[in-house]
Length: 336
Image 1 (cartoon, rainbow, N blue to C red):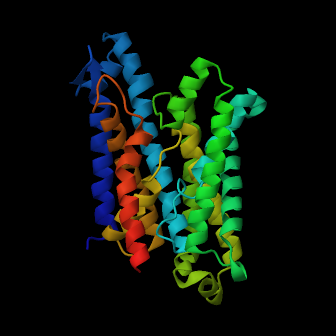
Image 2: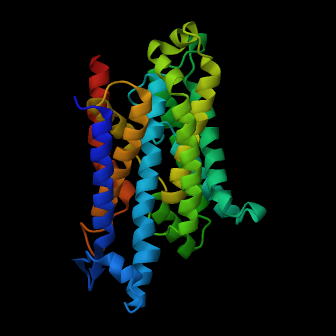
Image 3: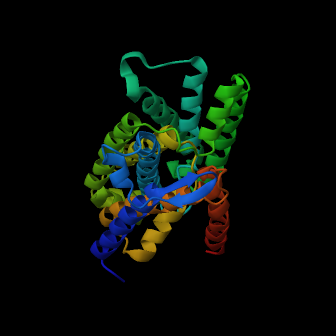
């Protein structure tokens, strides 16, 4: 098994290479074309200004958005799986992403702009929705002795997801046609509407949550002994659970506010990371961020090229791949 540092270098190089290639990927007259010299076309003063705007305002934000969202969803799934000792824990399956999407749709329905909060408004309402869904799922999942059960988490996530989906559909029926089309495309996983200012806000919030999780890595490792075992080794389990769940809600909320509902990244990537590295949360946190960024970047690139000139919502593509993987994991856990 390679050291985490080796995997870190390989994944970082793969992300940079794929980001360059994805930015070079364009379309002309319905055909996929490669523009490997896109930095020159972007920066050359005598170049095509229309092409430069396409690269600078559409392709680059989309590529960086895929990296940022993947780097948020995978660590969120990793921390949820670590503290709950539940290999099926994932922001999408547990209803956290659905709560975040509901918060954004409610804000759009009310026509709220955020006033003085400006760019922080949509990430804030997404976080509030994610946090509300998290609290509800945990309250449903706690059984006798206030213990969180695997079955309770899965069923709680199903209930909250169904409730949020029903409310979202009800609200969407009130939208005008153009707004409905844009919102529906965003909910299915739309990365084509990102701006540089949105990416900056998402990067700041996501990095802050990852740093907090990094500082709590020792306490999170203690949860391998279970909640009671963590208390026996001196960890304030209740406080740590709240803090890391809050951080996971921030990551999931930011991901949803930027790219809509993109499932299974937070479920599958942590399992791949555990195949690459030992069960040490701190290195696995950054490995999952890099691998999540790489997986979503590749998925989004395929989504916009497989049926060119039409585009597949990236959330649909990840669901088509992730659902069989979920069935395999679920079957393995039931055998145990």
